[in-house]
Amino acid sequence: MQICRLSTKFLRDILSQNATSRTFSRMVEAKLEAVPVVEIDEGIFKYVLIKVYGKEQADGTEPNKLIVRGFNRAQWHSDIYDEVSSSLMGLGLETECLGGGRIENRPDLKQIKVYGYSQGYGKADHLETRRLLLTKYKDYSISCSDEGY
Image (cartoon, rainbow, N blue to C red; front, side, top):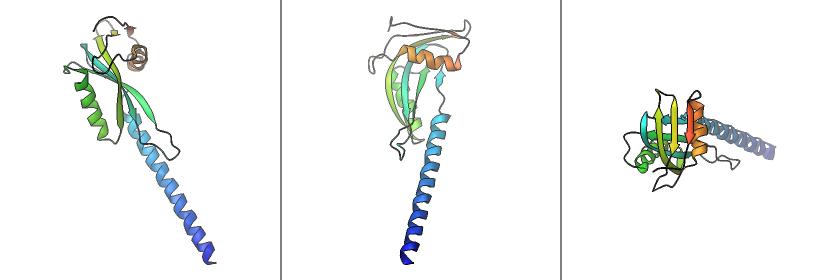
């Protein structure tokens, strides 16, 4: 009988840990899901393509998503990355800069041009950036070019 009680308690503890792990996993996924895919200004500015990671889950997977950030106020690509990564770190999310470039966002013409590169982070995948921009700017004409800085 003593062994049965220990086994039952052991199983309850394991099930409780699994429930806690699932709850934690859902919280991380919710935080990751809450991060907007695109945040860019109007005009011409530098941008970075960032991979955002949630915490590694019990099954070894690491949820992630790509985001685009570009701001007129940033003098350097690193200014954008530092601002975004520190705010996401506060949510318990890790980041990796995949590269940068420039964006020309012309809302008056419903046009966006993605081009150039970052001297510090290298060239972002402009086609991937375009794909992400289209999730927010569905009715815009979005072009990519490797020309320009």
